[in-house]
Length: 247
Image (cartoon, rainbow, N blue to C red; front, side, top):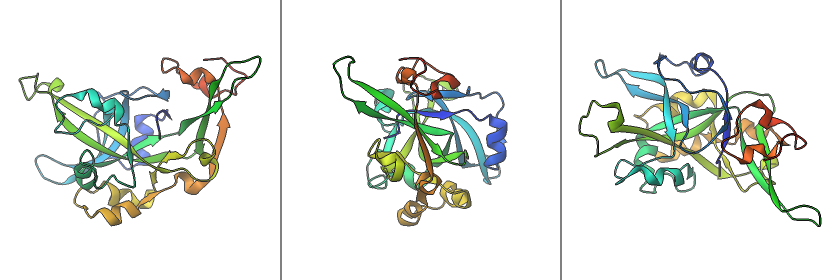
């Protein structure tokens, strides 16, 4: 799975990298070295302009943890941070979003954990690893997004009435990442951004063919501070080696 990741690029950088044509500067997502479920995250998606109907590539702040439109409440979103590539096109919670509401979730890299057994002098713990493209390029993680209407809010134009949430698509881990955890996020190559984001493309097989291993499997995997184990910790020091602050 992908349960925590790093996203520190500015919205100005992201609009340039992803050729975004619409971004509301009033929407802000702070750089984070410990993005966790339910956090606000940047997403790149395409929606038609309400007046002209022309598709616009947008940068939006979404809530990580998908809430299907038919959900009775938002509580299940925290459990739906990942969607399995093998079944994403057929599961009721994801299939409509896979057909029409796909997005890219920019990341510097992601974390996975490896259990470390107890010894005579130390307790068992989980060692975090930071996994990123070897060349330091941005990861365009494949994602889905959904809209959920809160029935407790009476006015449609109240911003609190609508939740926009997202999930990360994952697959079996390969290469260096596979020795740490059996699952990993999928990404979309820059040449395929347009096809992936276009909501008029709805055939699941060609869409699934666009999904790829991050950086073509050329990944840097290194142990980092156990401080990342606590979601309340944040900052670049989390990428320090295990001799750094404990968690």
